[in-house]
Length: 210
Image 1 (tube, rainbow, N blue to C red):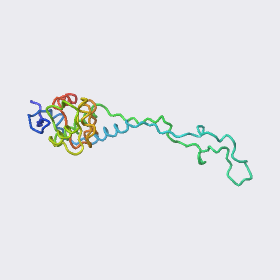
Image 2: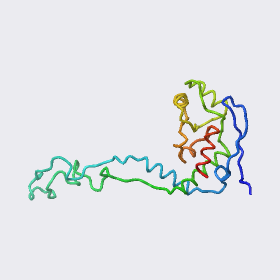
Image 3: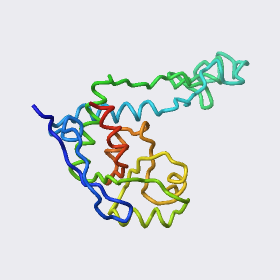
Image 4: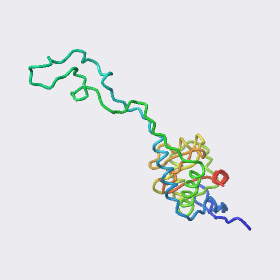
């Protein structure tokens, strides 16, 4: 039985159709709702991006407080042995972050691949623009902006590519994120209204998710 295919138009940077590309429906034609896998992928990415550098000082780390603030009896105050007590202003913190927090969240490879296939299928249905080539001859933000307008890449745009001239031409354009093919996340695809990718890259992406 022949494998089902999804056909997408291929355009050049002038916005003219130059052909079609047939992609696996297994990767770009997923119709089932896999919200949990997508949710877990986004949560894992956000959690793993945390630096976990927040730190508070515990009682023994706060300077001062070596001398008893006042005598034990006869002052009318509750007894106190140190001004660095957690109940005193300027004292140590109880149960605060210590700088060693681990916020890592993992997702197994099959679930992550399912999440990626799900969001790519959504983009293939609406919002994925396949171009014949993203190779540029010079660094030009103006030409890159004109090309995006020609291919009707509007709103938040995810541009897949890592060539130096492409990255430099795109870095000053608002609402445009550039990602290398091997660095695309589920969140990147989900957050973009339009995804621009070269024909050879979309075939490579397909091969890695089959």
